[in-house]
Image (cartoon, rainbow, N blue to C red; front, side):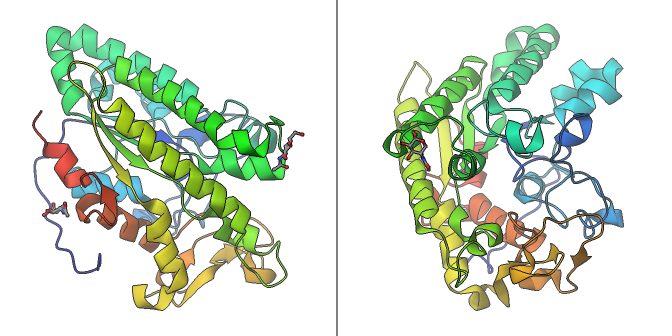
Length: 354
Ligand SMILES: *[C@@H]1O[C@H](CO)[C@@H](O)[C@H](O)[C@H]1NC(C)=O
Ligand SMILES: *[C@@H]1O[C@H](CO)[C@@H](O)[C@H](O)[C@H]1NC(C)=O
């Protein structure tokens, strides 16, 4: 159903700027700027299908969903990493960030501790919001009292939550009781969202958590390569709570924010259940790996093998979708109906007058 949609490409972007927060599903190279970070993908393989086969630091063989969304909204490219703008083109930093920035960091989570153990250094969502505060300062300095208006028309995309759940099951660093874990995550999410709203965000596009228990790396922990129902149940509970949270926040204040939340769980599940009807011949194994079960026993490394038919697989590596799967998701987010995203889709959120 998402396949037959016609996407219009406009010359003028529908929003003045996009700001992106979250984890590897949204990262466009942030981690390349973190010396100590162990979650870097700036080597060939990752990026093999990106223009020029360039490894940019995206966790995909090409573009990710954020890239496609930005393109559907009329941008040539999705915004560059904030750290790139901060470090590589310092002179124009203030002006550049008015056109968008990406703060997302592979491995990051809602909790500050998430990502630290496996990757040593990532940029948590709390830090990402602090970085956005620098952008907000630039707005005030350069635009004065027009800052608020431009920010209110800009789009804030957030894709986060799965790493927190993964690590809870892998390391349980917080030692939080199972029945309290999701509410802890949501409490943290609320805190970060309130931070963004205080800084002027008015249009939030939220990507929720997919059935992470079906990632290749989790499947191979079971004898029959089944999904982890427990992890999937956590993902579902998280998404339900997140929907309620957004609903609540959208009723607060004099000029409340507007939002779209993707039904990432159901969308992905329908592909997992019937990959063939979405033109995937394989919805279980990883494309980049070193063999073994589901080609997912090792992570995608510089010496890994890459599959040839990358458009036929749902998974790029142990965790992440292929570019074509990211695109399918982005199409549903941009122009899909309310079985994919609610209470409105991103194309509507972008131009809504309020
Ligand atoms: C994490 O630790 C807490 C406290 O010991 C425990 O109650 C909980 O079940 C653990 N969670 C997982 C997923 O092992
Ligand atoms: C979402 O997006 C499309 C394309 O912009 C629009 O035509 C459509 O009405 C929207 N769909 C729904 C169900 O809201």
